Image 1 (spheres, each protein chain N blue to C red):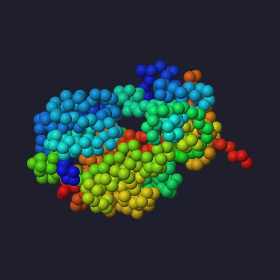
Image 2 (image 1 turned 30 degrees about the vertical axis):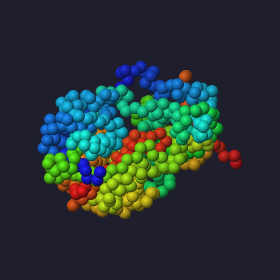
Image 3 (image 1 turned 90 degrees about the vertical axis):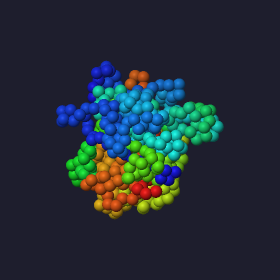
Image 4 (image 1 turned 90 degrees about the horizontal axis):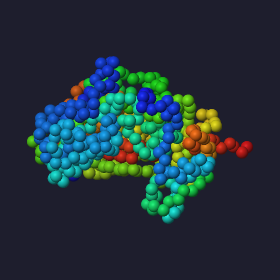
Length: 149
Length: 399
């Protein structure tokens, strides 16, 4: 991959989202160690990712609410090769990305952390962890919930 | 609408990966569009000027990444169409042009539609994101979360199918191997060397459980097809291929919007509509051309099309000869897995191949005595689900 049009610093930096009026509350929340998702004021349903209206009932009356950060793994993949993303992820290979079913309902793609790859299983209970991946960027990741026994 | 519109010509250029050091050409999408049009016009015995005052269908491209693209294509080709439609349905773009063009013909607005689907994703000057297809939700909510585009999304779907139904890599392997066998008889295919199960199973892991040989191969190329009203079709050719039926479903979720079962595609809704219009059952098909960005997509669609129950796709593939010699020939051209995915044009190869088979112009890989062919298209990877666009088309030699 050529880095001709970008600086080495940009090339080796974590992929950044575009912060917009729509999603700013989510990204600001992560800086405060809060995982925010949208809830519809009209029908009460939750949704992720950020939309301008409720995908369930269509209402534009949405609020950002704090998720419990708990859920379980619906499906997962072990990434072995970087394709179409920042080369910085080469440093992480191999790593797991899970599709986490939050207790509130929506599913969220997120990297698994603080565990063995073999701990990543369908239906495994997980909880959110906040990782500062750049000076101005915090990303939610998940880790298995340790058994109480 | 059954049989009111027919395909009367088609074109498909050879595929390559712009590897100049290996003697491959490095062409632009404009050159592929022109080449594909020329092949389609020759196939139909028509000239470019026949399309002045008619319809032109243009699919967007991965590269160049132009917002106003159909205007450019019309100017480049030198056609003065009455009507232009442009498709941005990703893998289902060619199918969208076909159904929309057919609707315009059926409405009597035009008699003919020339549809061009050409792309040159391998000719992007650098591998930077400048020419890449971008979705806002992928940029904002997937890439920063460690996702790797379609490979990773299909890994979640495949994992789930394996978990729910016991599907094995040997099942998807049979699809990859059979399609490679078909590609070995397709002059324009990019990958023609025979594939063994061992090679399939041990191919490089990309996003587990997706391995390299589960993925389509990206190529440059151009495709085109020509639609005509039933009446016009009979003037143009003695081998019209009729559109007997189609069904579409977009943004489908099987179950709740937040927690759908990702092993079902919208094909499960589109197929019954297509069969109803055509007046057929899936078992009436002489062959099926199934959109194949990944092996598991083919297996899931065999279920959604009704060839077997949901979850039994693995067993069905195991017990069925899906080669051109078998009970249900699948992807007789080798599909995108082996012939190649020409960017947005990849899904057009399935339409072109169905027409070619029904006209008995498929050479060495010709299916015997074909009467009806089913073609699917899926496109637009969704967040947390599978594919947004789903199209099923039924083609036949007789109305």
